[in-house]
Image (tube, rainbow, N blue to C red; front, top):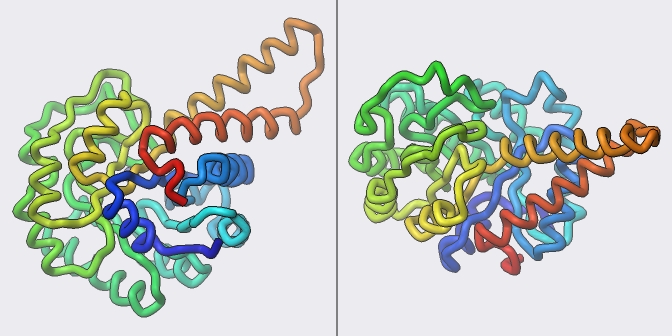
Length: 292
Ligand SMILES: [Zn+2]
């Protein structure tokens, strides 16, 4: 199965009313565990690398590994740069062979966000690469943040404004739009309140494949409702990363309770198994299982 673009995945998801999971990968266990889950589930998948994870592994080191895993997979895989803010990094990702990039200009004024999104999409379209852009403020920055430090806010000030979304779509050439309607990056410590009416309105006005960021740890009904309202790409990472760490910790504890030695390569194996299990679960909920 070839490496595919985000656009190709979004077309099928739109036609069949499901969402494709986009999972951050920053090491080999994540890449292999997620591909194994996609093959087991017969699901399309997006392997995503976040600009904030560059300190964990350089883009030039991990890109060929992600791309090779994608090309060898038995299901369609898009390779995507997540939350690119620096144009130079977006261009590096495209040159390395990523089939999709996200330009995150959500912190910019609308006109500037449009202008800079267009700079990227001009290059991307010439290279056959898909583009995701973002409008509105998703709570907490990518990589999580401190919920305690969150200030009180008025949803109308920070959630995606449907009229602005229309202006944005009419003036840019993108394949998917990340929207803010109450989700937050990182793991939730209190129940989020999602504005589904706003989400449905944005979908009706723009007709775009919409993207949920901060997709970790919502209850199943919130995912299903979001997909019914037009979410087609669902970013999921923190919850899995947390569960995998917990699994490894309990296995280490169990071994030490029984006076058994643990080796570093045991951790890799446990991690891959835990990743695969959690991702298979999400693919069933997102409706992408069986769609490859
Ligand atoms: Zn995000």
